[in-house]
Length: 129
Image 1 (cartoon, rainbow, N blue to C red):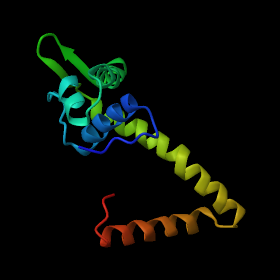
Image 2: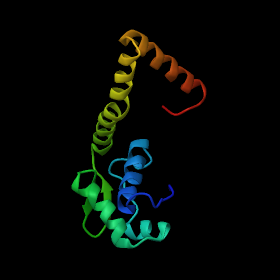
Image 3: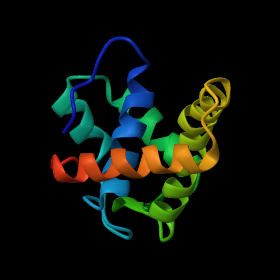
Image 4: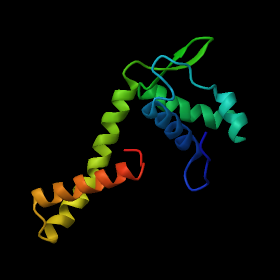
């Protein structure tokens, strides 16, 4: 499990941790996620804080409750998270990249070549894409 930092709300970090595990395939759809008490014990946080993070994912349809059993990853959760992350990626990285490329006189073809070369270099360095 990842390390919790003090720079952001802990419950958000718990939700993001679960999301990352789902995206990575570590937590498969329909699999049970750790309980809020397990998160609380592992990270030495209040169980209510852990529950708040888990409940964010329940509200967004990523997790669902089985009464008396626990929380489970919803069917379609990975694809939903991937779509959300792709959209965020475009807004956070691609749009600023495109604006800067335009300022520098880099056309779409040149930019695509640069991106392709960077992806190839990252793959040969053993980076996860």
